[in-house]
Length: 243
Image (cartoon, rainbow, N blue to C red; front, side, top):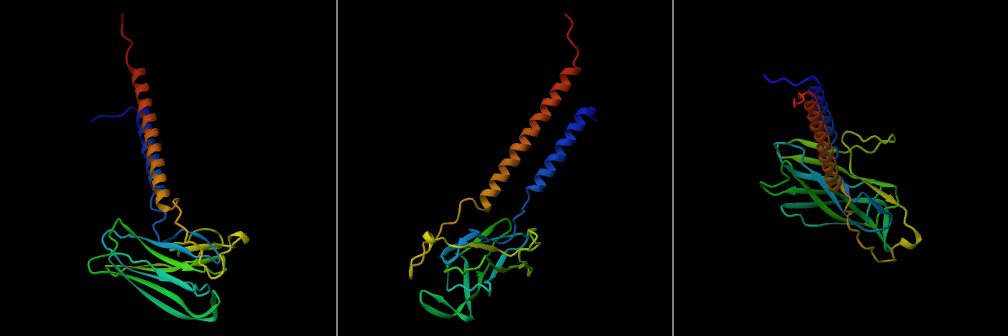
């Protein structure tokens, strides 16, 4: 049986502990449903995507229900076709009516439901985005979208918890779109929808790639440090050759 000398054993165990901790911290901390981009301007129009990752190891996501906030109705909501999915749009009455380019609207979209075709859906280890266009965005600080994610085995993930005042993320957070007041120069022209912004490139996927690269670099550095220490210990224990 091979035994490691005490300094080498300590160094090895330390490296294993550090790598385990780092990989644990780099796990899927954002494996819930999100909206991208996460910020927009009040009164404007925008293209957004609900990003739905699959957290099950055995079942596929086959239905996604997005409930629009009742306290922040939007006059215009349209969806983009998603291959392999059908969408159902449900409207609700709004009182008082909302004004959109001089017209009074008494109805607004209240719920969007995407359903996968037979043998389809979001498989384990995958995610799917469901794009929508919305506007004019209401004059509120944020919009909270409650989402139900149904799996092929009947399980339902309820992403419905609103943000807390303490800033700590709840266990099952709902997607939140933060809205900022428009400046005078950024106000959209009357009767003309503002250009749809392109989703920022620095989204969750880029953040995950950056984290992965950082972890890889840290592990490589620790491995190099361990190997260097072992080499140093070996040279100290080798006898000096006699002349």
